[in-house]
Length: 230
Image (tube, rainbow, N blue to C red):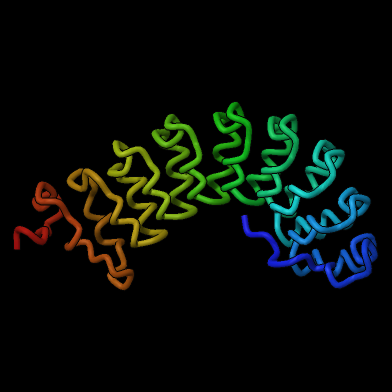
């Protein structure tokens, strides 16, 4: 985590700036992590903490324990930045309402959810629909799940990297991935099983011409020759 380079209130009279609402608000709007240096009374102030979290979700680390434990407040925090989930109380990281709100704002926040919710299908789908790369934080069973994998690559073709190897060559998943991002071709496996439509949908401007990426066994299936067979 990157912390502010210096205490933004260091030049103030001892304790003065840190306890001044306007001063602290101005600071956290610029750098949410400045909340670390605020007076404890303002670290417990909902307005100040929400302003800090909106700028940087990890600023929630410096909020009062009472706010980290407050369901209604935690929901507001993760709705502003899903990464605030990282510092919500353990109880709230196990709360499906809070976790769903977090992953709908930032799918990668699933990494901070309780184990049982990372294994929840509804939560997993919500996460990858917001950020396909969130697939990397999900259990293997979801990486090998066609519906979850397809949702992930539709949002971010490069999420194909995190799909189970046995699914990467599935025509629907491969096609969705390269349509979203042609560079996803670098993660294709079992190319021989991928139909010609997948290859035709790879945009050469992405820098990954299909014919350069095909495997030998796929030549006859796609009508193209791989590099080593030319």
